[in-house]
Amino acid sequence: MKQIALDIGLAIGPTLKSFFAGPNAAALEHLELWLGNKASASTRSPVPTYLWGGEGSGKTHLLKAVQARLREQGATVGWFDASVPEPAPFDEHWAAVLMDDVHLYTAAQQHAAFNWFVNAQTFQRGVLSAGSLPPSELKLRDDLRTRLGWGHVFELQVLSETERRAVLRQAADARGLFLGDEVMDFMLTRFSRDLGSLMELLDLIDGYALQTKRGITIPLIKSMMAES
Image 1 (cartoon, rainbow, N blue to C red):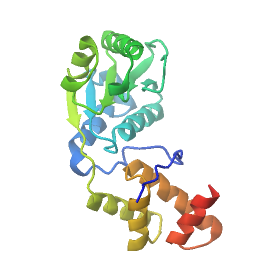
Image 2 (image 1 turned 90 degrees about the horizontal axis):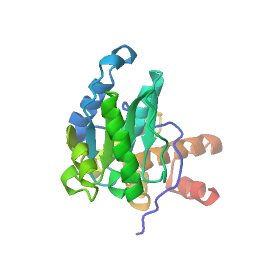
Image 3 (image 1 turned 90 degrees about the vertical axis):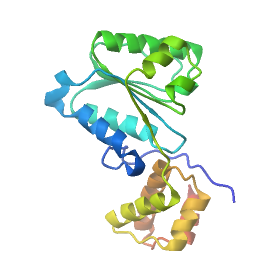
C-alpha cells in the first residue's frame, strides 16, 4: 500500500520537550545542557555539534527546537538548509548558526557554510549542523567536512514501530483523544512514518474531529483528507 507523505505545516513548532528521545537520549541531553538559559549565554560552549541519521530520525526537529529555544531566550540565530540557494552573510550578533541537510549542499552552499563556520569560530558562536551521513562519509569539500566532525557527533536512530505507536498513544492521551488500534494501523500504513509528520497529522485530526464533533475513526480521517 503506497504511503502518503503529507505536505502540511506545523501548528505548533518542534520543541525539545515534544521530542521523544528513545535511543537518542544522549543527543537530547547534550542539547539541553548546551542551551542552558539566557543567563548562561555568555558561557555557552562554541564547540560544534553534528547530528546524523536516516530520514525520520529527528534531525530537523532538534535543529528547529534549538532555534525556537534560542529565540525564546531573546537570541537571534542563523539558519541555513539545502533549500536556501544563497544564505545571508554571517551576522556577528547571532548566538549560533544552524545548518540542516548538509549532505545536500551544492558547491556554492558549501562555500557559504564554510564561511559561516569560520566566522562562528572567530566570534565563539555555537554551530549545530545535521546530515544523513557521518562526517567522514559526507561528499563535501574537505575543509567543511573536517570542521563538521571536529566537535560533538551524535548518530540519531529512527524509532521502531513500537516506539512510534507509544509516542502516538502518549500524544493522543495528552489531548484527551482515543485512538483505536485500527486507526493507529491506518495512520502508520497510509501516511509517512516520520514521527514529526505523524504528530502533525494527529494535530490535524484533532482539529477536524473538534470541528465536525465526531470521534476519531478511519472514515473521519478519509473525510478530512478528501476535503484538504
